[in-house]
Image (cartoon, rainbow over all chains, first blue to last red):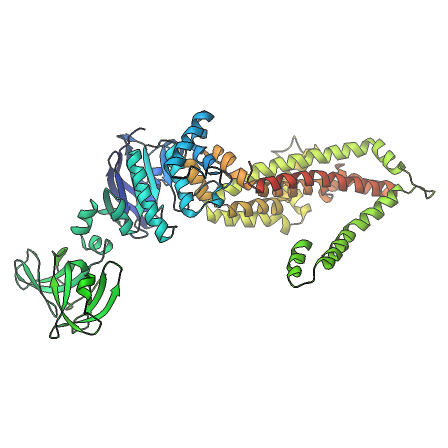
Length: 358
Length: 266
């Protein structure tokens, strides 16, 4: 299989006044799986469809192995694409669907059948080749769609929210399956999703998109642990946003909560907003504590606590089941810090004592 | 229809006798006039059975000429309908939903405007373009294809809308199929029933239309039926029965073909 590399350079596209792509640039290395992550309307699907040739561009270029393909018709681009709604051809069975692209390429029937058989096996559906799409479950249909996309030995694999139409359990199983197959085939892959958990689980690198451009591009760990902007911190994972004042080079005072250690780069007295993940905070019972537990939600492997300051603002804290022993809503507690803050942003605006965001 | 109603009634215990009664009633409603006509066409002037009406009919060269003419016009009308309706409906539904609504309105126009007006307008508008055709009865092909649009376009369009043409064409394009291959190998196989329905309506319209053909003085089959009815009663009934048979045979063939398609066996 041809090992493709994909580069997007400065893509522009607008729908009327709305800019869907506003100077998007991105690269996907050979064999790499890059996820485009963002809220709906951020342009991620437009970007993917532009790569496939299903959407025209106003400016910018798309390069596969350094060759500009942005003028080619969709049918000439050799992209394997998987759609959210499967888009299998209803009149053809699974095998015929997989063979479709090869038939168009005039591949001989014998090698076509062989390849379809191999791919059915790759996606774990060797006994389902004769089934029509409507005789398959959603997850099975999407496996067929994946096999169909891979059958043409595409330079790049494009996945447009491939798991969004499936229920939770199938979603997790299939995303692991997609990752396994992608590694096995070794194909450069662009995967679009709005689900941050999905993105973190499957990606080599994630591009977080906002308003038609990449807000941050990095490994899942980088994106999660060192978000470049407040938008990224907020969109990927849960985060508390606490307003406070700088007390020293490495500490911030949060009214009603206490001191958090944070390198702000600001002088003492400067107003600041601190972003910190719920799991970097902890609580312990203290009858004199300034915080009150409002709610304890059991999440399976952990508890999610919501605690309120005296002024009524709330923040989220993740605690282990052991730590949760003896805690219950209504009791008072102290907050402590387990790990670093994500971001400390200078705040010129009037400070509200504690604002919460998750 | 009768069986659907009866299945529902079975559950409340009305059952088989009722179903049979409905079936007999409906069959009688349709068959009695046909049988009465058949009897009349077979009765000679002296009250005994004879095939003379049919014999003189089949011996009349005008019968065969008008039938052949109507057949050609119907086939032409179906071909023209297919070549207009298929690309238009697929294109507007996959590329431009706003145009799809406009096409809806346009396709209904022939219903709102009297056919005589349509024909005069048509002949006036296309006078230069179709001048070679004007004296030939084949001018009826575009006229019938247009007049039947309210039925043929909407029938096909409904099928296209039900199919999610956009996502399927996207998938086909990404797999390397151009527009023609996509239409032939992906869309039409799934639209077969809708297309057949659309063509049946267009063909049936062309086979049965009288006003325009008579106005333009072409001896199509319906015009022949009316003419013979003025002079020979038994022959007129006989020719109607033959027409019924002629319409029934291709319709059954097409319906059976369509049923095969809906099972998805291609």
